[in-house]
Image (cartoon, rainbow, N blue to C red; front, side):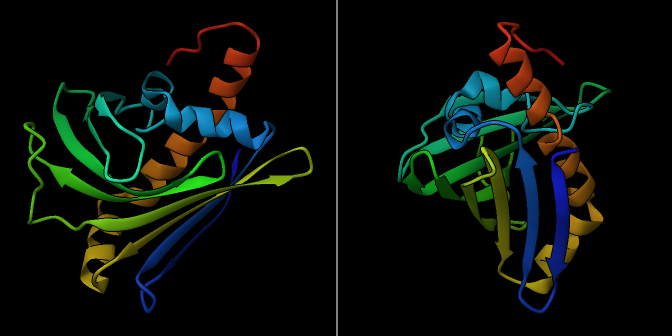
Length: 170
């Protein structure tokens, strides 16, 4: 499994997930830079994502929704704050209604995704910082650790399938 460590720190308002991939940094970057690949790994397997808008540059926005097993849809957005291709990017991640209007009742996290070379592969560090302990606790209670871990764990299969000329599907 790619996810090697998960830590949440209520005092520092952070959730940090570390993963190791047997693919170069540039290949892991492509997973996030290509909306069709991102769709295959952004949600957990039971909540696949559909990326509607994808502008991965500073000031850009990514709008998406995830569809649950009962057909229920849950929308969200990234407001991209910085990009250091292929080493990582930062964005504010929030919940939204199905028109992609931010939902002020749910927390927004500041995220920094960093990809570094390690033993011919990639170490990915995903850090989410929340404005309050209540916001962090709210997403923890919603199952963010399990959901994010199962989503990230799909990247190995996608990368292997793509690298072998297979389209990779859920």
